[in-house]
Structures are given as C-alpha cells and as structure tokens.
Image (tube, rainbow, N blue to C red; front, side):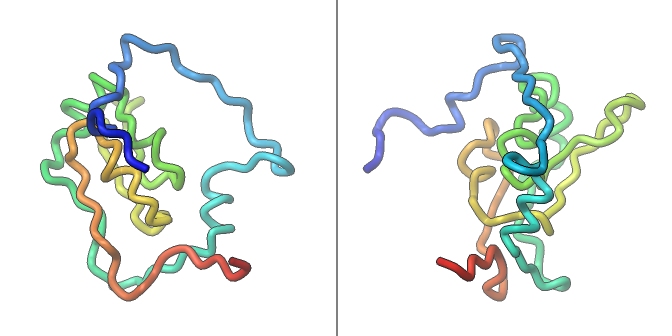
Length: 132
C-alpha cells in the first residue's frame, strides 16, 4: 500500500517551526540507547568492503542541513550512523559511522536534500536475526 502524495523527505519541518523533544534517558531494562540496540541487531560488515553510504555533496550537512534542520540525520537514523562533532568548538563536522548501519535505508528516504546515497552493501552483510 503506497500513499500517493509527495516524497517523505519533503515533509520535514525547519527547526525554527518545532520544539525539541526531550526523551528520558534509557533505563537499560525496558529502553536502551542506540548503540546497545545496534549491538543486539548482530549487524556484520566486512572491514574492507566499499563504503555503502556516501554524500553527493559533503558540504551540505554542515552548511545547509545543520542551520536549517539541526542536521536531522543524527535523529532519524535508528542506528546513530550520522553525527555532528566539534559543534561546541565552533568547527562542526559531519561524521558517518557506517559500521553501525542496520541497512534500513531511512537516510535515503528521509534526507531533506536527498544528499545521502545508500547502496546495497557488498558481501551480504547487515543485521542477522537468527530467531526469525
């Protein structure tokens, strides 16, 4: 079933139009942090495989997405693949932690500038759910 209205990446609101959501800290019993959840997914990547997450223009995340949307990839990615580092020193950099990727393809769908290019990883790596 597909909704035929507009691409999902066009629905993101600018940061000046919304209030930040303050989530409670994970308790480690019922709720968990992102990296613990990535570990449970049993995701495997070959160390020497080609990069499967690339940027069409590496300047866009800091120059455009950060001031306009507070760089949304660091929030919509369920595995914490994307982050901004160095913001507190005034020299922000966009970092891709591809080893955390669980291959959900959210970044390819949700990125407001369609700057992130997700391709199928080499070698059949990814989440391993043995009980499914």
